[in-house]
Length: 174
Length: 352
Image (cartoon, chains in turn red, brown):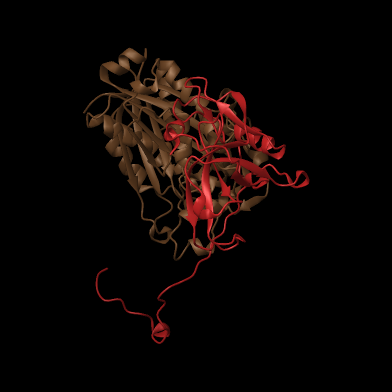
């Protein structure tokens, strides 16, 4: 700017604006895509459907339509067990708005048997400080009349009581 | 300067609403097509660059997910611009000029249908004075159209002629979203939707993707029979605040055109990223394109305007005319932002 800024007479006594609030909201209609839609329909019928890469043979979960390693469409659907391994987890000690969960609780990445990628979920029915990597868990589904095409259909995962999986069996997924 | 050429280009069939496939599922076919056309796999491509905006999907870092369609392992050299794919091409061109790559994959995608595009685009305006007012993209274009008419750049009648010509040209473009048009005098009987714009003055909103392979020198000659050489490329920007701009001229386009060397020799064909009819007149004049130049033979953005991809598609279409032998020298223009805020100009030539 050249020269001092001179306000018009009418604005001389007006309080300077130091900040504004400008709320913005946009609404979206998400496109899940073909592969994720197949997965979500499976979830609504208590089936976990991964998809295999035709190049590397790995089973993607949840499938998004491509193998991120090879960049090709996944084609073959693979039905996976609704049990697997806790590959990593965290203890949540902070209350999130809208969450009814009692603190502390555990979020984990669970690798269903036969999958090469894990699903995120809650681990319950065991004290939080006994949850560990390698622990075997199974899905606890909502009642059949509450099943929906989203991951809320799995209420949580609970221990099966089987021996822990050896680290080598899931080290790629940590 | 190194010689750099477009050696492959592919685009999707642009549609109003792609409800079946997500972004990565839309992209994979065109990514695979350009690589197949030149016989390269991802490991033989030195640099990959994409252009898109997360505001279309409404998800932060959504562009990272589309990288899943590329085949990024073992790790690749990769970058992304939150801009039209034409600027991703510019980054790749710079990378090749710097000697850091001989081949590059450039792609971009615009899936506008999940949100309300006219509102989404208002989020790119300055956050204090304009964005809180939510001026939609058509309203801003209408302000510019009014300024252009008053300045004598164009007229409502010429704008209707531009719309009719572009959409008729698009009947020869199998990828276009809108094809064919009524005569201009019929179009002019329609009501205005944002004065002085009528529906025909506005681009269609749609979903679409595009991909391209660039290569340098002898590598380009190995990969393609008739590479489309990038002889000049430049991009310039106007002030962000619309209120300080002269909306009836496009100085940034003029400058970019001069730096890219548009006027150095006759131009056979020009693909102009002018989403609104009055903008074709504005860009045409800023680039000094005369009557002998075929403007937007693909139909241009008035026939298909997938946001963030439509600029790259202009370069792909212009390169296609050269690669087919139909044109010897072509100009491609890309824009980004409201009222032609940023402009890129690219001059392409075939071997004599």
